[in-house]
Image (cartoon, rainbow, N blue to C red):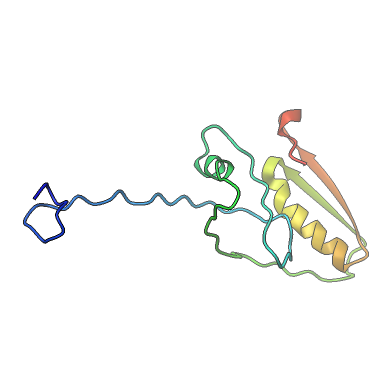
Length: 123
């Protein structure tokens, strides 16, 4: 036996394959009700595992997703104007909500966003 490379059982301790690394992080899709897939807005930070992993994917590679984790209710025609305030990447759940409101209501939507630098502006 060459240390467990033979096809028959032996008394050598087995070398286990390294476990696959699972990285999990919650993201909000940009679109509320796209039937054909999801669109994510992911900012890449140098020290972020998930953002770096997603940005390194090649076309055709897949990722495992789950959700939705939460649902919100919307009272149609209750308000004439929605004001939304977000900082940095916190804009993504508001984009989804605004898209839904604009599709299903006559209300106006106004965004106020805050970023540390102009390079941090995502959209």
